[in-house]
Amino acid sequence: MIGKKVLETEPVSITKIKEILEDLEKDYELNYEQNLTLDHARKFSKLEIEDAQKLIEELQDLVKKKYAIRIADMLPQDLADLRLLFAKERVPIKKEDLDKILKIVKNYPPK
Image (cartoon, rainbow, N blue to C red; front, side, top):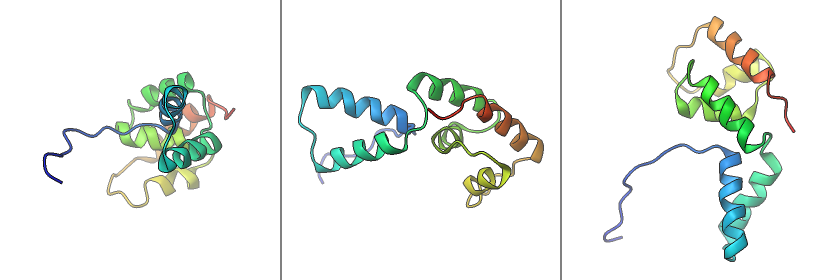
């Protein structure tokens, strides 16, 4: 593909994806992939956009933004679920930090 390159990438939460696609759907007809993505986002988004943004901001004090977004999308309820999110990563996270993350997440119940 001539002339196309990625200038930057930024992780986005599933609630933000849902909001973007719903806004786009008002003005344009979505293609097949966009419709699938919107359907998935509607089924699996657990928070409202404002709550998700607040949660991500709080979690960024403890972990990087991409991990904060993953946590906000999944809303792990216990230590085992939270450890699964970091299982593949080489990021050493202290148990105290994991406990802090769980306390923060419990302040944001799913809708």
